Structure formats: C-alpha cells, structure tokens
Image (cartoon, rainbow, N blue to C red; front, side, top):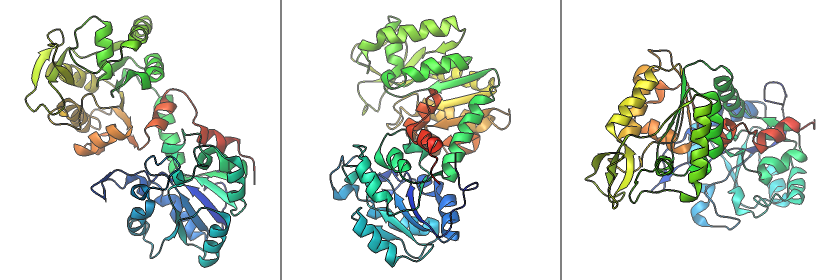
Length: 398
C-alpha cells in the first residue's frame, strides 16, 4: 500500500479525502481531533509544494444542498490548526470550477471542497463522475480511516482512476489496531456497549473467539437479559434477536469465554428521570427502564480490568449522555485512567460515543490508543477489511 513515506509526491494536484465530520454544539466545534488527525499529512504535502483539494462530509444531507450541513464553518479551524493564512473554498465540484481554482492557487495552497455529500454522485458510487473529476488531479490521498467503511465515490471511486496513497493517520489507525489485535496477552477483556445488539452481532461473535472476558453493557445488554428470562420492564430491547443473543452465549460457553452481563442496574421511568432507583436485575418493575449498570456490576467489571493485561472498549455501558446515567461509564474510564500505566495494561478504545465518554472524564492518558473511527473501527474488529483500505491496497496506478 502506497503511503506518504514510500511514494514521493511533489508539485502535484492532490485530491485528499479527510473525515471532518466533527461534533458541533450550538454552532461550535466541540472536538477538533479529526482536523488534527490530518495535520501531519497536510503539512508534508504543503511542504512538497502540492496543491491540495480537501474532500470531506458533514452530516447526512443525502445529495441535497442544505445550509446547515455546509463545511464553510470549518474554515477558521482549518486555518488555525494547520497554521495557514488562507484556505480556498470550492462550492461547485465540477471540472471547470476545479480548473479555475487550481489556476488561482499557488503551490503549497489548500482548498476545502464543499460537503461531498451535497453531490448525489457521492453515495451512488458514480464512476463516470469519479473519472471526470479525477482527470483534474494527479494523485488521490485517503487519510479518512473513520470513513473508509463506506463504499462511496470519494472512498472507492477515485482510486480507480488515480494513484492512491494512504495518509499518515490512516496508517497510524491500521497499525495501532492491528498491533493490539495481533499481540494478544492473556488474560484480556473486551467491553462492548451501545444501544443495539443488531449492530454488533458480528463483533461480539469475533471478540468471543479472541478474548477471555467479554462485558456486555448499554441497552444491548437488555436483549441478553430478556433471553435469560429476566423482566427488563420498559427497557429498550430487540425481541427479534433473542435467539441470536442465545447463540452468542452458547458460543461463549463453548469457547470458555466469560460473558459478563449486569447483575444490578440504575433504573428510571425515562431518560429525563433524575431520581433513579438502584435495583438487582431480577427486581426491575414493569414501568422502569434499565438506563445504566449498577454499582455491584461496575465494581465487578473494574476488578476484571485491573486483573487484565489487555482491555478493548467500544461503547458506553449506560445512557451516558443523560446524567446520572453516565456513572458506570465514567467509573470504567477512571479505573482505566488510574491503573493502565501503573499495571502495564494495554488499552484501546474506539467509537464516537466511547471517545466522548473518555474525554468527558479526562481519561485519555489511560489508553494506549484511542481511535476516532466508529463504524470503521467496528468493521476492523469484526475481521473485515474496509472498502477504502482495500481500494488503497489494490491500487497499482503510478
């Protein structure tokens, strides 16, 4: 796979795919990690006098031009983080507009392309569009590991027509995750949370084969509890997946993997309930929702963490966006923060909600690596090579 170290790019026109789908609250960028992730690659390309056109998506406009999804708001942060006096902005992504902007730019300049999802050709995998746009460029660079699980034109289309190179952050993500998975130390454990088991069936099945302990938290644990004949009250469940939950439990037992479910829970009438009740898992009332794992469950999980050599974490174990249902997730983040380096525990975390939870508790120092990727991180853990990475590996254009 070509990368910025083994493939020399100088004085070229670069089509660069980034992931700038940053979290925004009240019009302000809450976390600039995804902008900082491309800094190393962009600086190299600028120093080598290339003209760089930065492609990215924001939200899901689905081929419509909607002002609330314009990438224009990110220009000030790009200038500040990349230390640039000027960043061009390309509203229309067509050959004429590209050529006009190329002629205006100096070598070493950067241009941000408007939200790539404004163009219907992006999600439709339009190869004619990809071919036309590619004719205006010399090299394609993908530094968006977190978007590379999407089979979209900007991910898999352009590499069919241009030499395709992996950016530095792309390489870092792949190497860090592979290093963690390929250097297994036992005992090890995985903590998997989130709202739906349907999105993580393959992940759980794969982790059970690799880890001594797998913790299941979040609303997805409710389906497992229901499969084990517990009354989960008014909690979120996926009744149609009870058999799959049973299959996962049977597989875990067969492979001697300890599957941990909550034994107690913090319950409320709804997410806005500020007066929750701590209950044992067999005492949930019909009108209650399980919104976080309880103190005993948290203590048991934390004990497993400090007795592990490796910990993988994907997904909060409660409805952490709503206080006080962030208690267990925060406790897990803190136990890792306090003990990981001291006890030499190799730790990795990924997924947007997981990263937010870690940052909310200032627990970043406890993790050997934190991936900004969500779906792409999951796919990689499931053992699936993402379409974007596959396109880079298969590219033989020079």
